Length: 392
Image (cartoon, rainbow, N blue to C red; front, side, top):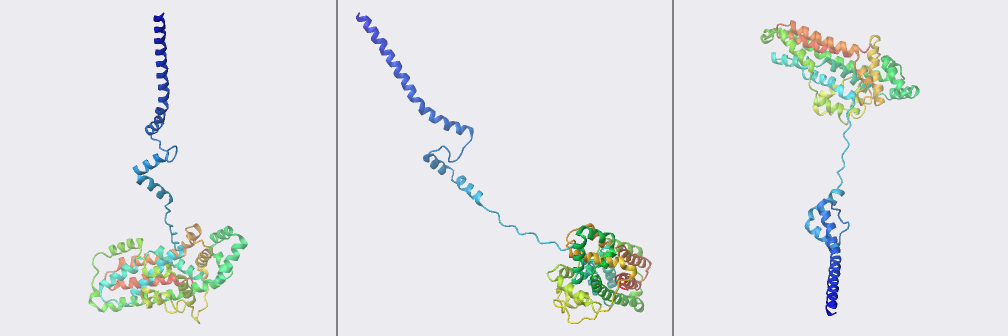
């Protein structure tokens, strides 16, 4: 009996000990589960700042990685500095006209007597290497800029645009270049062009005539009677290649036509008419472009009565068309209307013929004194004829 009670107590003790052990295992499990999620986040590499963390955890991580915690807000709030808008490009007419103005600076530079064969060669290289296509387009562009100074013509152009519609009006001028001459105010605008062309042609012709006369007077000097070195045909070939590239643009003319006072200078140039040339005024003032009297129109100007020659109405119409396009802001970017008007066949042909005559003259020359004749007649007087033939 006692043995039975003893065995029964021993079994109860073993059962009690097993229950305590099971309870202890259950109480230890939550502490292990608190460690498991943090360990799992560390292994996965996903770290969400400020989420699911105690204050103690935040302070510990801030001390461990201060540069990262401070750099991120700075990168977010930093604003980029404002970017200034690009400067507007000068219109196509202003850019094209530089070639014509650069030619006039060379005309002014070599308006003098020759004292050596080197001076003759330098003048030939300069005056004979202007690209005829650029020179022709430059004259058309410059003439159109003068025509655009007419407020009367501007009113007529804008009225016609509103009456017919912009696209129809543009196509009308494109299909018939002489149409622009029929717009109200065109005669007033063209009087500026014809007067300036007359004075420009006259100054070119005068310098050319001076060179042509030197071809005769220089024959009395030994250095001018000397035979030309090398082959004349090689000189003509080199000149043709140089003209294909064209002359460098004059910095003074760039300042004049692209500078802030360009419109004031053009207004005065157009108002001068045939009495004087803007290029004479520029020569007198040097490269600073301090044109005498420019900035305010002259009180009185004598201007002759000019009309577009009947056989040059297409050319005159292209000039008037370019002026109309300038009023309508169509000369700010390349387009078919501007390209067509600047490529006037009659004008291009005249300047190209002058260049061809120069090359033939150079090829046929044998002595130094013959070269001034080539320069004066073909590089200058022929070009002057192209410029002056617009007026009747």
